[in-house]
Length: 220
Image (cartoon, rainbow, N blue to C red; front, top):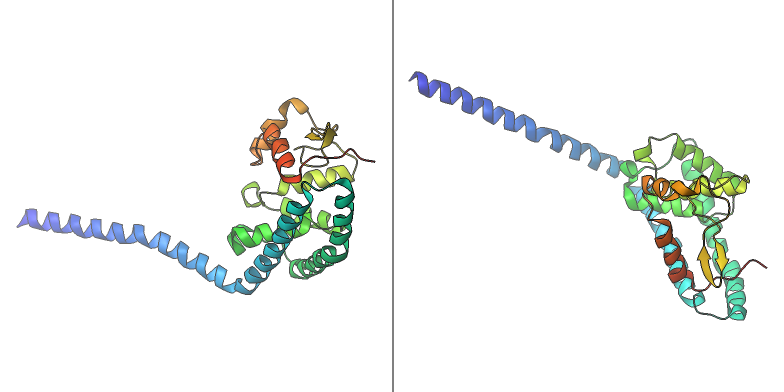
């Protein structure tokens, strides 16, 4: 009898332990779902703007990639006339959504909506808005920052006349190929910094630019 009681007690403790262990992920899932439910309208809006932002650029770059210099100039005119106003509308709306709050993290709105917000910022011509967005990102812990943080950091460094840290902006053009920018912090450790920011090695990045944009042209 005593043995049965001991076994029964152990079994009860084991079942109780399993119940306690299984409750934690359930609670975490419930909290995550509730956060997403609260933010559902913002998630839909950001994701919609981000999808349009990316689709515009994908189709436009496909047309521009192998076009002649003359055709590229004509296509750039189409972009300025037809697509830049859409970018400006997105920027104005994102400014309103971010007013009085921090950056949209993936935990709050999901990866896709957070990435969409970043795409709108990085494609904006409003430098002050970009500075404000960077400040919001820098207020977050490193693991909460969007994956494109390094790109915006470099963008502001170029605007301020400082060397880039990650080499993501304004590559040189050598013989129709993209090449390393001239002003880079501590070039010998560039790939280590890129790796810490979740970016691919720099040579792979240049090859990607050549594939995406086709031949480059030196600045006039």
